[in-house]
Image 1 (cartoon, rainbow, N blue to C red):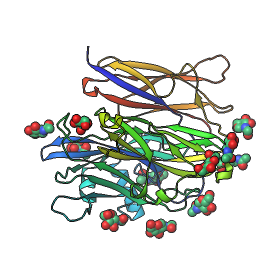
Image 2 (cartoon, helix red, strand yellow):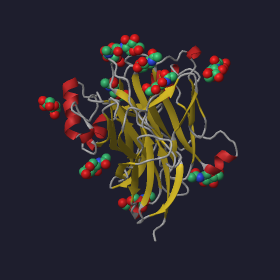
Image 3 (tube, protein in one colour):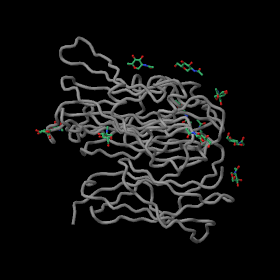
Image 4 (cartoon, protein in one colour):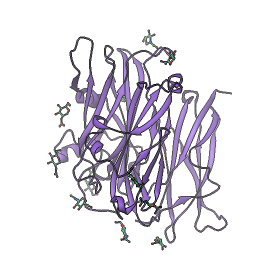
Length: 398
Ligand SMILES: *[C@@H]1O[C@H](CO)[C@@H](O)[C@H](O)[C@H]1NC(C)=O
Ligand SMILES: *[C@@H]1O[C@H](CO)[C@@H](O)[C@H](O)[C@H]1NC(C)=O
Ligand SMILES: *[C@@H]1O[C@H](CO)[C@@H](O)[C@H](O)[C@H]1NC(C)=O
Ligand SMILES: *[C@@H]1O[C@H](CO)[C@@H](O)[C@H](O)[C@H]1NC(C)=O
Ligand SMILES: *[C@@H]1O[C@H](CO)[C@@H](O)[C@H](O)[C@H]1NC(C)=O
Ligand SMILES: *[C@@H]1O[C@H](CO)[C@@H](O)[C@H](O)[C@H]1NC(C)=O
Ligand SMILES: *[C@@H]1O[C@H](CO)[C@@H](O)[C@H](O)[C@H]1NC(C)=O
Ligand SMILES: *[C@@H]1O[C@H](CO)[C@@H](O)[C@H](O)[C@H]1NC(C)=O
Ligand SMILES: *[C@@H]1O[C@H](CO)[C@@H](O)[C@H](O)[C@H]1NC(C)=O
Ligand SMILES: *[C@@H]1O[C@H](CO)[C@@H](O)[C@H](O)[C@H]1NC(C)=O
Ligand SMILES: *[C@@H]1O[C@H](CO)[C@@H](O)[C@H](O)[C@H]1NC(C)=O
């Protein structure tokens, strides 16, 4: 019998979006990093899951659900050429300050990043017109600096009616190169998973829970991204948005605050990891690292999207499983009549090989047109650790 694994599963509903004419290609991203002990010393390996307007992202102009799992090497290049802009998918930089420098320096690292880049398509919603890709890049650790702020920015977000047209995006990540006293290696960042788009109701206290884990077992704390962490959006927060330390975002979407039917806005959260023993003393500590999580929200007076019903396990349910065994759960989804459930999707933060099998109609008392599916995953011993898995459902409405 293998060692124990903790699995956290979130259930979420991938949904449709109203098609409007728009500018911009970016619809949010979440970052995380792990430390690799490479042949030339420690390297920061960044994992970025980013969302793009369908056909304007790295998945290419003919992106469809058939593109899921495909490599974007060729399609990314085609879009860059068509746009005539080699930075259309963002510009990478690092800010640091070695002991010999008087002030911090910002360095363009596009060449190193783009030459190590591997990327594949993780999800596509043809109805909602978005694509999501998983990008892995590496950059050598700069040892003699108290911090490395890796920035990813570009032009532009898709039209945000609550914040503006042609808004530049900026995400950043803080790494600290010092060796940790417990593991003898530099720190790994926390990990978070979010959907590219959440549809929320007007005139309601909406809550969005972002699932987070930390590979080093540190305490994870969420906050609204501020100042340079997020650029333009720091002065353009959604009215009255707040987030708790444990990552529950609240948006009271009252019309009196300026939210309207159809409004679209961007949310930017910073997720940091702190010394577990330090935080309990209530001191103001500096985090080991920080990552950005950004996504879109849309406000509607009526949401008609499919949803999960009992006996599907509750969101954020935690499962402990052993490597070598197969984990299985059944999920049940109900469409809003007259639509029908079209398909289930699944996303793991570490690209876990989760399968959706046995999709079939089933009868559940008091619910019409329910479909069920089984999610399965067989972790190997290399998967020991913490994982976040996310399941979505989409209906036939287009
Ligand atoms: C962006 O959205 C706003 C509000 O919905 C709209 O007035 C504006 O025309 C849109 N701009 C573009 C370029 O689509
Ligand atoms: C996209 O699809 C169109 C129509 O099927 C085809 O003509 C075109 O060559 C395709 N483009 C790419 C880059 O695959
Ligand atoms: C990319 O970032 C570098 C370093 O911050 C900056 O000098 C350069 O102007 C940026 N390029 C674009 C196209 O934004
Ligand atoms: C990208 O894939 C190649 C070939 O599999 C591999 O050698 C390289 O290390 C990968 N790069 C990253 C950043 O994972
Ligand atoms: C968007 O902003 C960029 C600079 O941030 C500018 O170069 C570009 O022309 C703008 N595009 C539109 C459509 O306004
Ligand atoms: C990193 O790898 C080198 C050899 O490749 C090894 O000597 C060193 O102990 C490793 N460091 C850590 C912290 O694992
Ligand atoms: C906001 O909307 C909620 C739900 O309609 C309502 O209970 C609350 O009083 C409203 N608050 C304000 C400040 O308008
Ligand atoms: C929004 O924030 C203001 C100022 O903190 C507060 O007075 C108001 O009640 C809040 N409105 C809602 C709907 O939460
Ligand atoms: C609300 O906005 C959505 C999307 O723009 C639109 O389809 C719907 O008809 C609107 N509802 C009302 C009552 O205007
Ligand atoms: C966390 O804080 C404790 C108490 O200050 C300290 O002994 C320990 O080394 C710290 N752990 C790390 C990983 O820095
Ligand atoms: C919301 O939409 C559903 C399905 O489109 C419809 O049956 C229902 O009456 C709508 N509710 C409101 C309050 O408009």
